[in-house]
Length: 307
Image (cartoon, rainbow, N blue to C red):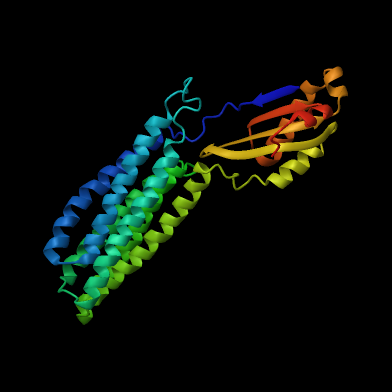
């Protein structure tokens, strides 16, 4: 019986120092503006502004969580944590998705209450703050867009800030409507539109992070095609116990048991066969972290839990 294991030499799922600086820049921008927005929201009576501030608070938390996860993911592996803490970024992305849903739920409850009895809103103050918010969020989005968004961790923070930008645009429109028509429900309607965007972003984050945490096959790895390609390699008779999952963003892994001709063990052909199956896997599916167990035909009778 032979086994082969392949590790690439890449750094996966951990952003570099440049990414950390970009996230810190966005964090400082948003934190500073958020403090001023809360004051104006209470002074003007605008739920839309308050909802933007609440969303911005979740943005700040999302970026802080992303920075924390980067720090953890950079820690080396150990005898206990054999992959290090690389999945910290996936947990951070899941937390970001959950916080988006929680904030969306709170805002929906308050919006429904205000629809029944719309309060007076200072439209001018709403427009001014919303326009400033658009500028601040555009700057933050530009910073995060330059970071490594293939990391689900960074993508989670990016989606937070992007939906906040959309929210400010809606808030500015609502302020103009209030100033020109006096229709106060516009503020609440803008809030509900932001809620829809938040739920959409949250669903995307939770779906992707859930797939990683539950060890589903990566999007780009079709196991039926993998099995067919492995069977196409000379001397491979059968493939079983085929599993693929994602350790963290950009780090897919795969294992399989390959039944090969008995002669491969007798003439030492397994070494070149290992290189061949790994090359076939990497070339088409970009999977560098793979483990193959070679088995003779007779070994099948001793396997008790084939998958």
